[in-house]
Every structure is written in structure tokens, then in C-alpha cells.
Length: 466
Ligand code: ADP
Image (cartoon, rainbow, N blue to C red):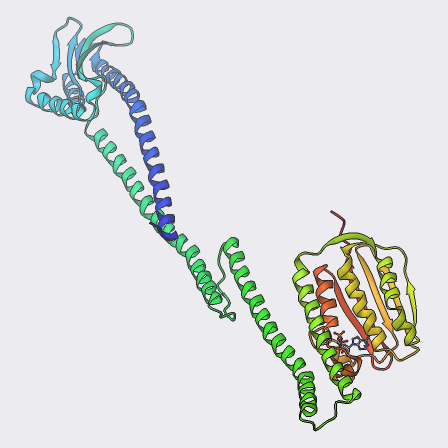
């Protein structure tokens, strides 16, 4: 059986409190009984001494007489407290005897005490004991007193009352703490379980495909707060992915529609015999099919760049060497366009994925070549700062309008569609660059002016080789 957090929490707290109260009650009672017995015995001794002392004062040395009236008062008050006394003078004659004075009262009081003590403390095996104390006037003995009381100790009416009250208070405290702890447990569990239940609800909605859900609750504990944040982040990134997926599908469909329509129309016309399949027309069909092939290739590269985000094959290498390698591979293109290329930089160690970084440099260099006028200049700079490696590629080509600069890193964005079609671009190259650079924890940015040229800058953090 699965219990809710609320039940578990309340039960746990109640159990802890119950245990604590039980231990405290046990210890209190144990210590109390232990100490109380010894204390009461001391009290009894002091009391009998006090009775003897006040009786001694009733003797007058001048007249050699006793104040029997006062002795009676002392005797009665002692009787009510549980002490039966018998007072003798010097010559052992009885001066006052509680039992002789009121036998039935004495019996009542003593019976009362013995019944109560036997009920409450059967283990002490108490019984009536007799103690004789000397009465003296400071220098000589003037008489004696015989005290009968319940030993080894006894509790009178008010002592019992005190103990009863004490136990009632203890019980009250236990009951109150128990109720209070259950209440606190319920409230605390509610505070924890409410946001968790909301999170569960949100997670359910997300799994049902509703990515717009967000948890707005502000929970008290940081763990639940983190959980909520994670769920919110999850919903947000799923929502972004969903938008990207839809956009990508629409873009791909749009990109493929034009070449397919062209090829379809041309081949149909040729099949119907409307057009003769001349070399020029076949070449045009071939160009469109090549474009589609390139697009599929680019898409493949993009998918790879995204998928590889998590598994970069990093090695340590000289970044300048990578740049030189890419330039060598593009030499034919550069020469054909009569472009001048200048590399400024020295050996720079970088811990990154060689193949992916090559792709970045290839795409940026290909763009610089593509969007430069024949005979233009391309400058490459490699810089090393304390925490990063900066790679910049500058051309003096056609440039990018300012309002389009933030958009060119998006998939399928081409600043001038007709021009891009001519240059064979599909608008994926910079999206791949961005993906790879970000996977390395870096940033790519552009500064450009129309007809002046563009400068793309890649900043990569220096990651030490593990
Ligand atoms: P494409 O395959 O179209 O070049 P990219 O993603 O590489 O796709 O570039 C997106 C757009 O950014 C290009 O269509 C182009 O308009 C613009 N662009 C990129 N690089 C440059 C550059 N060096 N000079 C001018 N425009 C550029």
C-alpha cells in the first residue's frame, strides 16, 4: 500500500513526538520516584526534629512546668500531618498522648495514609514505625517524645494532590504535543505535497503534448523549486523544439517544392513532346537535381551537427594548422575567383573536435568566397586571449543589411533569395556553424556593412585537456 506524503509525514512526526514524550515521562517518573523517596525521608527526619524542638520550648525551667495547652496544639497539628505523638516529662510521666486524646481520629488518619501508600507504593513495604526523641532545654534533658508515623516515608493529602497535578500536567503536555505535532506534520506535508502535485500535473500535461504549461507556484524548499524549474525548462525546450521541428519541416518542403516543380514541368513537357530534350534543358534539370542533392547533403550535415553536440571527439591541435588545411583544400576556388587571402596568427593550441571545427572554417570561408566580388580580399585572424581563442574572417564582399544580420544564423535564412539561388546557397551553412560553435561552448557573431564587406567572429573558450 502506498501512502501519501501527507500521511507519511504526519505519522512520522507523531511517532517521533510520541516516542519523545514516552521517554521524557519515563525518565521524569523514574528520577522523580528515586529522588522523591529520599527527599521525603529527609523531610520526615526534619519534621520529627522540628516537632521535638517546638515541644522542648514548652518547658519552663523557672517553674519546672510544661505548657500543656501548646503541647496539645502542636500534637494536633502533627496528627493532621500524619505524626502521632506521645509526650513524656523528665520523670517519664505522660504529658500528652494523641491516641488517648482522640483514638478514632488517629486510627482514621493512619488508615488513610497506609491505604494510600500501599496503593501507590506497594514496593516500599511501608509500615508504622516508632521513633523516640529527647526533649531538652539546651543543656539538660527535660523529657521525651515518641513519634509514630508511616515509614520509610509517606505522603500526606497535599503531597498526593501535588503528584496527581504533576501527572495531569505531564499528560496534558503529551496530548498537546501530540496534537500539535500532527497538525504541524499535516501543514508541512501539505506545503510540500501541493507544489509536487502541481509539478506532477504539469509533467502529465507535457507528456500529453501541451508544452505551453508552466508552474508558477513559489515553493518554500529549494529542492522542490529546482524540480519546478527543471519541469519549466523542459516544457520550454520542448516547446522550442516543437516550433523548430515544424519550421524545419515547412522550410524543407518549401525548399524542395521549387526544384521539383521545375524538373517535373520540364520533364513532362519533354515527355509530351512539347519540348525537345536539348542539352541545355537537360542541363537545367540536372542543375535543379544537383541543388536538391546539395540541400539533402546540407540537411544531413545539420542533423549531424545537432546530434554530435553531445559527443564531440575532442583532441588538442594547432588551430592555425586547421585553418591552413582548409585554405589548401579551397585553393582552386580561391584562385579561380582571383581572390587574395591573408592569414594573421601564430600557433594556437585548442582542445576541440577537429572535424567539426574544420566544418566551421569551411562554411565561413566558403561564404566569404561566395559573397566576394572577383579579385576581392579575405583576411583571417587567429587571436589568443587569456580565456579564449578568437577566429575572425573578414571579406570586402557584398555585405549583409543590418536588419538581416541577426537572422542569417537561422536555418534556411538567405539574405537575398534570388542571389542565393544563383550562388547555390541553401541557408544552412551558418546554422551548422552556430550549432558546432555553441556545442564547444563558444559564440559566433557578425559585423557587416552592405557593399563594404563582412566580418564573422568565432570566440571559443579555452578548455584544458582533461
Ligand atoms: P548559404 O548557403 O545561403 O550561404 P548560410 O547559412 O551560409 O547559407 O548563409 C546565410 C545567408 O547569410 C546567406 O544566404 C547570405 O545572404 C548571408 N551571408 C553569409 N555569409 C556572408 C558573407 N560573407 N557576405 C555576405 N553575406 C553573407
